[in-house]
Length: 346
Ligand code: AHM
Ligand code: MG
Image 1: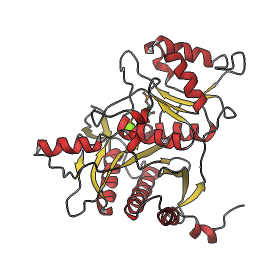
Image 2: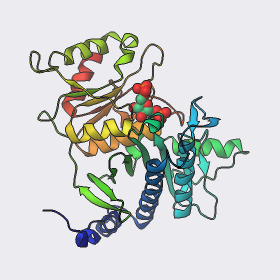
Image 3: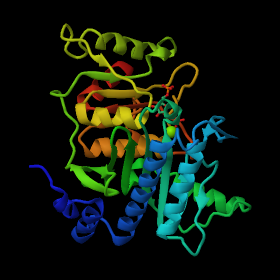
């Protein structure tokens, strides 16, 4: 049945959050935080849409901690995220791809949750108008901590607070800025997708209790195959195998799909099935993607949807991070696809 505009009131993200709160799945603090994040995503969506005309594309000059040029929109999106979380009054510490160290929220605004996020992932795609996204994860504080950049001891405490294994995640989500703007969310009880209705400025429930397709799904692989020569032998053999049917040798070869934007590639994998991978290679043994604010939140979502997230040898959510910007090899998708990949790396 199609939803008419008059029924939207029943299906918005905020109504969904209130229902979760009433059901006891989340507390009111968490509802406020998620609603603040949705506000940040709406603002970023609007900026991404207008980027070319608003003279926002291009380099901002600064390099981030990982030596990459920051685009203007990365910087602005980071500010938007930080401000929305700060204003929510429910966040104590923020760790972002764009910040060298965790950032504390002023005492007057501080709450009990920790938010890790990549405010604008895949930003190298922006100038070409290709999908980008925001990724976030929420943890509880392990011990009260207030960041003070001049106080090494306090900072170390905050790093420990932020560096929690994915198993501790209370909520995770991503927002994809593409032909439509979709916010996909889990609070540990299934995965729900909300599409932004730009005319109303509201996220409306569009994907109820999402499950990644199993063996009935599409046979799609999504890797940057340009790195093939630098991959370990087992992975090269795996790739060759996909071209002759994968686990069902002699059947139809897999299709290749690679946007180069984790959120976009992940979203397609969640809806159609298949595998997305960013392996380690001889140049970068841990690959490119960050454990804390990219791989762990995405893995919580995929597991909640019935899939798997792995380094190829270990479950992502079991890894205890040692540093905020730690990288890990990453494979995510339908369970049988990840099992098949792992059988080559054992
Ligand atoms: P970023 O965080 O600097 O934007 O990089 C992460 C992005 C992912 O979205 C994407 O999956 C990957 O980098 C693509 O990397 P590559 O261009 O090496 O294929
Ligand atoms: Mg990123």
